[in-house]
Length: 265
Image (cartoon, rainbow, N blue to C red):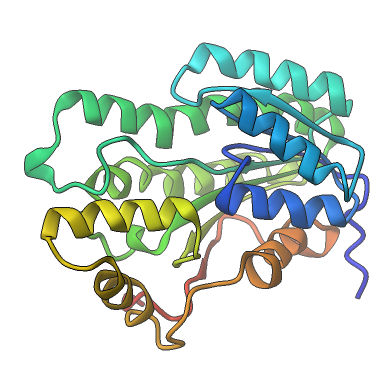
């Protein structure tokens, strides 16, 4: 099956390392035209250089998702470089105070978290929809976590702040289907990234237990497969399918790729 996504114009947020970079790598190999972004300018430059080995049409712009005013500039940049936006893949990093339980959070943490996980997604969706409506084609994918269905106390900021993306995606799917615009949420399990390891190391220090023990208990042991996911072989190809023509009948869905981690039905 040839999914034929070459030439698709894709904006991927939080995409200079980890999951976002892995997805960008997969899509660039498939011939997509891509704009990547993160807050760190040097990381943006390094990621563009890395991805350009697969595809010369990769562009990057530093942008902070929690600064909503910067998102207008990001969309203008993407439209200028790509000539349009066919797909938005919304990914984020983590708030500074995460993992953390409710009792140790403050209102500044919540303000940051809501801007990062929810308000930036709302604004970016508003900004990309006019182009998709005009072209009568679009794909919106919100990356989230299995913990949306099975909330974890240590991820209270993320689980509460981004759970609303499921409702947002469902409404977008209903209201814009007539323009051939689909909207879906992906609930990810654990992938071995530096960001994931950093979060678990912080938690291990707090609990005063070895990192390896916590990684096994909280990551590997939770999945019936006993391993983490593979971005290049498993998550990336799923994204390729979802931005292809073959996924046109999938919208308003919540798709799990978690190695069976989630206990919720």
